[in-house]
Image (cartoon, rainbow, N blue to C red; front, top):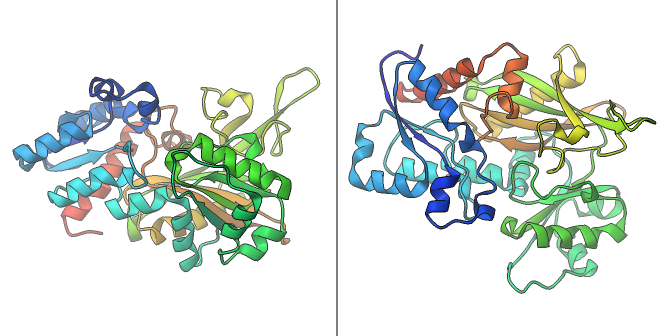
Length: 375
């Protein structure tokens, strides 16, 4: 149990609330973390706390201005934001301004982790392995003219990894600031110079809100997603799952294989249905497996380098091209999905005998430690 009775503001994003405010279906398409609000509220109430439901940032602003927030002991933040490259940091920034304790990472960390390029820069500073990369920034999103191959190569040449990026294929491209594998399709793997221009311009057209594209060395090895709970010296790995790719056999049945004919990496499409569209599956990995254990060690190192808090995920891709496996950080998720039996972090926890109720309670306990002079 978490001790005394608390009043907890559960801040989330209810699609119907945003539609009432005039947002379109397309605007609200990315609001996924808030889908778990009812389940989170049920756990908090079961723990003996009073839950105040706040379904959108506009309601939060009004309550903060009214002084109501003075009655809250803690805010449980699950907001992804709608606008700007720092959107996941907007609610944490408001809560920081009003000195309200809250769950999960602070505004600076949330904004940083959403920008994949800057995240990789920090990881390199702390010697956490991540694939060589370059960032292509877009100066505008209106009336855009397609970038030429020469322009793209000129942008890449400014990167410290330009020699690797420009001379070694395959490469991989993804939107600079999107989550849930948005904008990632099978053709994002760049097999040669002739693909570079096509892929970058395609991503520019399909993900204008991202304001840029990340180009990195393609990693051919296994893929893991590592669940982490806690903060700083108290952070620990709750479990690790492997993404297993599938291919079709002669009878058109999906068969698990680590290098499938359909996809070799997580795509937006493969995450879009309950069965991952048959293209992939997520299965528990054992830390007795040396590569899985290395993925966990690297993920925890990255988690602490970015000063993430309370709970989330780190996605890892292996590369054994040099003869021995190296675990590379692909992405850090300080605001992971929390829908029971569906989102990856609750699935990892379940695979390791940590129930959804226990998962939420452990995150809450981690946040409360900061009120008692902890990390």
